[in-house]
Every structure is written in C-alpha cells, then in structure tokens.
Length: 173
Image (tube, rainbow, N blue to C red):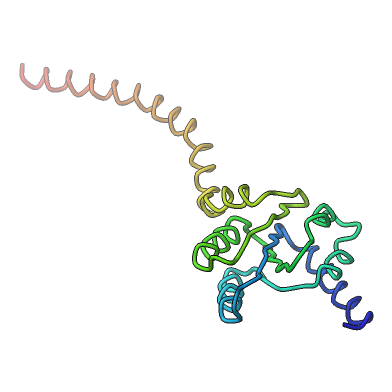
C-alpha cells in the first residue's frame, strides 16, 4: 500500500473514531471470506462497523487520541469493530459470532478510551440493552415516589372505610 493511501485511510479511520463509544479488537485468522462477511453484515445491521485495517494505519489514526491505549494490543491480524451507540449490542453480537465461528478471537477492546479485556467484553455482552437499563433506572427512581403516594392514599382509604362503616351502621338502625 502506498504511503498516500495509508495516510488517507488513517485520516478516515481517525475521523470515525471521533464518534465511537467502543472499539473491539478481534483476530480473524482462519476465518473464511463467507464467515467474515457474515460477521460484517450482522455487525452492520446493529449500526456498528467491522473492518480489517492494517495495524500501521490504526496506530497512526489513534496517535494522540483517547484510543491510544490500544496501541500495545496491535499485533497480528486484526479486525476492528466500532460501536457508535450501544457497546453492549456490539459485544453481544461478537460473543455470539465467536460461538458460531470458533476461529474468531476477541482480543481486547476499549470503552471510551479505557482498555477492557476479552472477559470484560463477555461480561458487557450479558448486560441488557440500553433501553432496558434506562427503564430499570426510571422504575428505581419512581419507586420511592410511588410508595409515598400509596402511604398518603392509605390514610384517605382508611378514613373512607370508617365513614362507610358509620353509614352502614346508621342505615341498619
């Protein structure tokens, strides 16, 4: 690859990294073209990308950025998965594809610039989607208010029961 082309690719990749939340580095040694296309298409459906990029191009692109900590992990044949929104979705896809294609190896990743191991990526894959986590957070925040309203309503309910009992007693007399 000519130097100008490498610089062009490096610049393009660097621009992509500005919008990325998570980068996962995988090894694709031993995978067939069909398997790579399967992984690439599945990742693309989720709104992420999965590309084979030369290590030298990536090193140049991450230089001076928050992703620079990945530099020491750029050895061998690497494919890079980039998540622009929900890193848990990308982790789920790659872990599932790893089970399907035994030769796919998840090496490491970086979540907002902090390096994470393959085990941490597997743990990330077990998290529920972002929408579910937000719903759980909202329910947790809403619970004390709902409990307080129920306590206040309980006193009014008891008063109504007492008044109803008095009404029934007077109606029977």
